[in-house]
Each structure stands twice: as structure tokens, then as C-alpha cells.
Image (cartoon, rainbow, N blue to C red; front, side, top):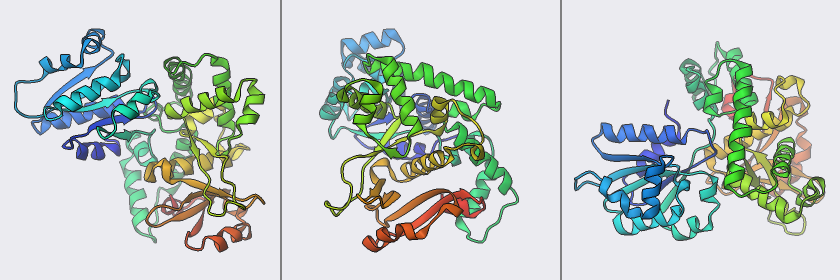
Length: 401
């Protein structure tokens, strides 16, 4: 199964800039690179693949980036060099910078790396104009269906989205798959596991083993406080981020809370959403909202996998999925929220795209009170507001998402 990002990376292979693939651990970055390598070989492109978990290769490239050159095939063509786990290098930014500045005509690098690399300010400074970053999130629902080998259901979804009168004989199955996706999230290894107990075990492994590696590589000292913060944020996904309150709860300094939040963002576990405002006097302009980027991870942190209708936090989970879907489609920088000092609010707004829109998220359509949003509609008539709900579930659900 090819991820949605595959085509974007493929189109960038001929560009001079290096391609850098980001994303949380276990989202499939290495698999994606192997698929790109296979495609390049199939069209007779010159390729090399370096996995820097190989200690001997790592030592060579740490000695000098120029040690890549003897591995290049004897050809006049540009070679696509895949570098997996580039963060293991002592100075990955310098490695990429030197090869780009001196050998960009001979080498096109496609690299993956984890949080330790992206936390390094030198990565941004020294590689300006030399790289393009591609973010691989956990799987979308379309990708989920492909990994589940339910091409039939995916074709139904696509037909529904393109035909406003289309109906599906499989709507109950689609609802079941969607709710499973909401509970267990989009990590590939979790999706392909069919047993629900094994799904929770896989998520626990990602939560405990791989998040711990994120902490170690990012230099986190107080692991207990870091993990407690992560759990608190999971319970508050979609809420305002109050650093002072978190500091008091965890009994750590504000600077430490901010540092840990930065690490969680750079590790692609959470994202902060800025407020949208034009009236500085009446609209809130400072405190962001926080969202987890995978509901499987969220539920694992909360140790709760009850069905949605049994949960008091079902609205939070639903809003988190809506946020992730918008990020996947438009990019996280485009998604904002709106709130005023007198508590008027709209959950998600994309005011800066070509066709701006706003969404208020409710678990059940019966909870929608249109009068509550009159202020936003009057203030921003140029930004259409719609309502996204999960219940009742019908074909229209997929036309809204």
C-alpha cells in the first residue's frame, strides 16, 4: 500500500533540494523510503540506501560526509541516496549541508530522522534553501481502509464523496470501521493487527518504548513529569493550553513545561493551534489549544478503549479526529480556532486558504445550537460556518469529512 505522501515525494525527486521525511516513530517512514527506492530502480534510476543503524557506516560518515562518495556507482547520472535514521550522525546538519553544497549535481538525498535531529536549531539554519520537509502523519481513514485490505469500502467512500445522492449498502460496515479507526488510531502496525487486545498491546509498546526513545534523544531529565504531562494533554485534547496550571499540577517550572511541550511537538505527538483574531480588544489572542495527533495514542495514554457511545469524552475524541483530518488535508499551519472574551467560540477555522471555512464540531447533531454562533457569522460573513457531527451516521458523514 502506498501512502498519500508517496506521490509528493516522487514529484520532488527531480528537484535539486534534498527531501527530508519527518513524522512520529512507527508511522512508516522507512517503509515509504523502500517503496521510493523500488520505484527508482524500476525506472532505471541510480540509487543507494544507507541505514545508519549500521554502526560501521555511521562511523565512516561521522569521520567525513565525503565517505559517501566511494559508494556512488560509476555513472554520470545523478544518484538518489536514501539515508535512514540520519539523526544518528554526530552532525547530521553538516553532513547534509556539505553534500548539498559540493555534490548536489551528483547526489539527491532523501533522508528520514527522528526528533533529536529536528530539535537541533542548526538543522533549520544551515539547511535553509537546501531541503524540503515532508511530514508523514499516522494513517488517514483512506489509508486505514487500504491497510485493512478493504478496497471495496474505500471505493464506496470515494463514490459517496463525488455523488451527493449516492447511497451505500455497506454503511453499517463503514461506520464500524470509522469507529475502530477513532479508537485505535492510524499507526500502521496497529491497523494491520486484527485482534483488539493485540491492538492495545501494540499501542502500549509504541507509547512506552518509542516515546521513551523520544525522551532520551531529546534530553528529557524528569521522565515521570514528562509522561504525566503527556497523559494530562491527552485528557485535554482540544482545550486551551494553560502552562501555569500545568506547572502547578506537575510541580515543575513553567520553562520545563514549555520545554516538554516543544519536545512533544517536535516528536509529532501533539500540535498547538493558534487563535484567529482581527479585533485585539475583544478576541483572545494568546493562549493556544492543544491536540494529540493520533487518537490511538490518546486512548492508550488514558488506558480507555470503550466504545464511543459509552464514553464521557467521546466529544473530545471526535474533535481530535476532525482536527487531524484537516491537518492531513491542509497542513497544521492553516488550522486555527476562534474565541472571544465573552466565551463565543468556533472550534476549527481555516481563514487563509483560497476558499476559507469554519467548522463547529459536535458528537451528536442534536447538540448543535445555531444561535450560539451568530456572533461569528455576523463578524466574519466571508468565512462560511458548517457543523460536523458523528451521530446520526449516514452517507453524508463522508461528504463532510
